Length: 379
Image (cartoon, rainbow, N blue to C red):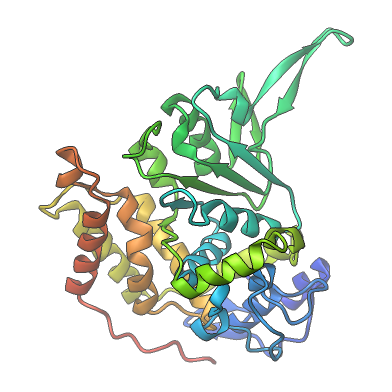
């Protein structure tokens, strides 16, 4: 299969190691075990580290079993942020885009910048304002008097990681400039289509829509984000620790890329090969379809949401050290992948409905029959 990283392919990328015998999972050729996929994140000179090293959260651990357990990422500096960090890495490896929503000052931009700093590719930041134009995002053709022709000046969207700060501070017209980029990884300006970088990820932050000077994201825009997370307030201990250390140095100033673009591309490629059994696929479809007929929802989840939930579940399984997806992967991710796409009756009547949407997804997951499929047998 083209989605499989064989040892020969790994040699070509310069990150080859001995992986032993290849495995076949129910007819799906899988050359890398899940822990080997995750271990690749720490390749290319970073030794035993994983992507979490970019946040300075881990001490060196043994090679071969590099999983992202709660114990691995528990740290007083990010107390209460374990789920947010895990979801951010899951979305990155699942080739998705991440929306971080919360009140000002809780670390939305810090998380986005730390994620961007972990990748040795290009990182651009867009500070969205009310007077921005779509061309400020995508780029514009400029007349060059010396040559007598127009030349294209790329916008900040041409990068591996694009940080969109306060995306709902700008008008819907400018927000829509990201639609093509997020869905198709390309930008069309004056009839000419240009491909974006690979991998390509947008990490956008936004304030709650009831805050002054915000424009709610349209449904089509929200649907293109694979997941939405909230940071929440830190614990009292973490906030005291912040006071003790933030006055000494900026924690972001010491961050260095720990994975190059080629390695990240290889890991993303390998995650696609994580196996999803037919019963688990049916479980994903059942959860998504239940949102479309729920009496408390005006708008349910789209078919794109079905694809996103499956992609995220693959990445979640790989980070947990498994080459196959379980129903638990799906259940854990369903609220963060689905809730922001839904329009509850409460929102249709003028309320925010965000908490209601998440609660509805949680109820749907609990009411959906869980398949008890045996784990794939390695041959």
